[in-house]
Image (tube, helix red, strand yellow):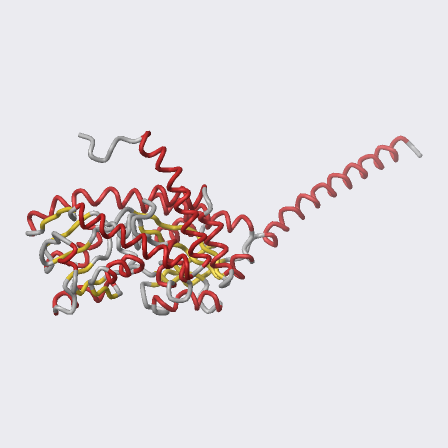
Length: 363
C-alpha cells in the first residue's frame, strides 16, 4: 500500500469514527423526547372555596406551582365546591377513578371511615405545627396511607391552619347551661361533644350557614378562622365571637389522589406533587397566622365582641371530649390506633413546648 493510500485509509477511519460518535450523540438527542414524561391533565374537586385564605387557596397554589415548574406539563384544573360532585361523594369518586383527585377534608368521610376525622380536626388535639410534625416526622402519613390505600386513595397533606373560633353566638356563653338546647352548626367530633352536653349540633355547608342564621334555623355557628368567617358574614348577625377553638386546634386538608393513578406516576412526578403540597402546607399556616390579629382588631367597628369561654366551660367540654374519644376508640380499632399515636406524639412534644417556648400568657 502506498503512503498516499495509507493516509487516505487513516483519514477514512477517522471520518467513520467521528461519524459514529456523531450518530450516537444525535441518537441520544433525538431519543430524549421519547423519554419525556407524559402530560398530566387532572380534574381536581375542591372542598373549600379557593378564595378562602389558608383553608381553600392551597390547592390553587399547588396547581399553579406544578404548572409553572413543569412548563404546563402537569395541569390540575381545580373546580370549586360541588361543581363536579358533592363533598360527601368526593372520596368514593376518587376510589372508583371517576375523579382523579380532590383537595378534601377527611372528616367528611367519618360516616364511612370513622378514623378519617382524626386527620382533619380533633377536640383538644394537635395544634398546626404539632400536626405537621406528626404527619411528616411521626406516624401520620403512614397511618393515613394505611387507612386510605384500602380505599384506593393516596393522601398528601396540603394545608394545616391554626385554630378555629369556638363559634359565633347571639349572646355570651357563661356556663354549660347556656349551650343546652342551642341550635348550632358544628362539625365532626366537636359536634358530638356539644350534642352530649345538651346542644343540638348540625353539619351544614359553609355557603348555607348565613341564611340559616338569618332565618333563625341556627342560633349559633362555627366554621373557621376569623378572616374566613368574615367572608361568610357571620358578624352581621351573631355579635359574640368566642375563643379558643377547643374543638379544632388545627384544621388539616389533604390532596387525595386515586391510588392507581398515583402508582402510575413517574417517581419524579410524585416528588413534584409531594414538594408542592409540602410548600402549600407551610404557606397555608403562615398566611392564616398573618391575618387573624388584624381581623379581630376590626371587630370593635362592627359591634362584635371577642371573648374567651370561661375556664369552667372549657374544662367541662374537655372532660366530655375525652369520653367521646374513648367511646369512638372502643368502636373502631383504627380510630384507637391513630388516636393513640397522636396522644403519644403530643406527650413527647409537650415536654419540648413547655420548656422551649415562652408561656402563652407571657407579658
